Length: 127
Image (tube, one colour):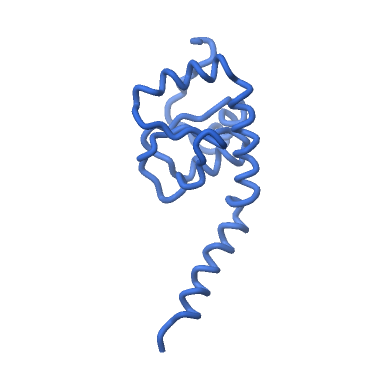
């Protein structure tokens, strides 16, 4: 399994994008922020703790559908073994991640959701 695990440290921008699109999955055990959208945009499942720090992006992860939400940090090694032994599962998770991105996480979708919230508040405003 060592041949398939690469710990690259902190990466951003194009370098991060290039790594994501070559990966079976992205692990971010304690944080699920904008990198969820980035991973999903590349068709890569996102794996994080169910209580990870988030700005709301974690709510786009559906356990065992487009990513993995684990309960205990001890599960990480089991998930890594599962990726090695069952890579087709993670390819399918990635396909679903891409669908989630296309439906919900493109800038147009995010803008429309934000606009709908503003319109709702404005329409229900007490004068």
